[in-house]
Length: 283
Length: 301
Ligand SMILES: Nc1ncnc2c1ncn2[C@@H]1O[C@H](COP(=O)(O)OP(=O)(O)OP(=O)(O)O)[C@@H](O)[C@H]1O
Ligand SMILES: [Mg+2]
Image 1 (cartoon, each protein chain N blue to C red):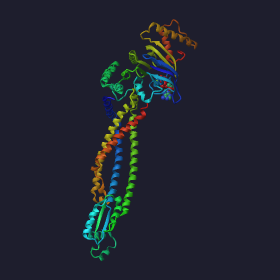
Image 2: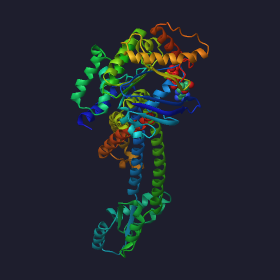
Image 3: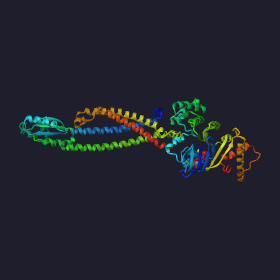
Image 4: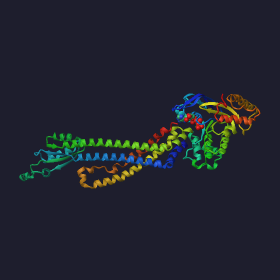
């Protein structure tokens, strides 16, 4: 579980990267975080990993109050989550196997378990043939799958991904998100920052838009290619989307045609969300 | 931590040397040079010291007996001398030898001996060497107190001079050794810092996956220790070879030996164990600590 309560972050340079942000992500959720460049998305991720501290407000992750977390407790806390970054962050001097096994060695897992678990997660991400390769010998997509395998190898409650598809082919992006979705189906909470409109449109789900350090939109949207949401849920989503429409009208956008298909409406909303158009989803 | 965990970390340390062989080699070289610098300064000092002590041992007390004493009295006095504190050796100097010594010590006005007939007027004497040259004045005084002795004299200036010389040499040597040690520390710290810096990314990633500082540092510790150990061993063998060569050259020159007390150079055999232990322990310790300390600034993520 992730909870931000009135969190602000001001860098020492004076930049206000996050401004009074409150957010709650429940166990088992899958959430996309979108927003334009420099909006504060990575800052939020850094907060959740306790790479930086909030200037004010309370950050709680997996039951740890990060404001009060002692330095020597940080390793213990980080073991409860997995991370996936745009730049992969694999240890170049270690093979695929060793990179993944390292997470289990850190927690002093029995050797027997490591020998069973690591090949299993490697096969989950379909990299069996690359077990003994070094990161330099892998493609971007393969590296990212290793990173995902590493993120899930110790069964974390939460996986945090900052633009995991940022450095790989768009077609491969879908595979990566499918993988994360699959992990989410097993109960792991997933928070994924992305820039890719198509991905969000395709998968739908909870979408959080951060613009200029503030959350300007936080709704569940049906994906175009997702299994359709149950009828009532979809209706609710539509109702919410329509609620937002009038505000858009006030600010001068063309009114959505009542005859527009559901897909088109969703497309429109997502487009405005991703464009970081805060009028589109003002709360 | 389980045994398998400890084994893993130790293995990582060994593997890391191979994986980062360039940096490990740089660390090895810097450690080797540092150990050689400080080690040879220490050895040089020890030998200087030993030489000065050796010179002091050449300092003698010249004892002249009362000429009226009988041969038995003189002989029994010799026995008494030998049992005195701080007395190393007692050498009997006959009247004839005493006369010759006197003759050789007087360079000008040798003609005076033409007027002297025989050497019977010379007293019996002893040439006494002491164990501790610093105490020579005291010993001389004690001998002088004996009523059988007409005169006992040593050169207090020589003793004093050698004492001062040792102080100065110790002071200069300490300064040089400390300076070399500081320079070495700086060199080693920069090298290990560079070596760790090259792997800061790796350290950061380890921290992200929840590794504790101790977990990350242990391989660095092992790595530094092994590198340092080999640097120590290398320094030992180089020192051994060079020391023996220099020792041989210096001690082969008999004249130098007598003039500068080079005979009291310390043979390597009597130092070998200490030199080996000192190098290897210092190398391993400095290597391990240097590498661990350098990780600190990168662990704070
Ligand atoms: N370490 C830092 N020191 C000072 N300012 C920073 C630092 N990191 C980020 N910022 C600033 O904080 C703001 C938010 O940055 P952040 O990295 O969170 O954006 P982002 O939403 O992740 O952008 P992008 O989509 O480009 O990755 C930006 O104005 C950025 O310049
Ligand atoms: Mg970012």
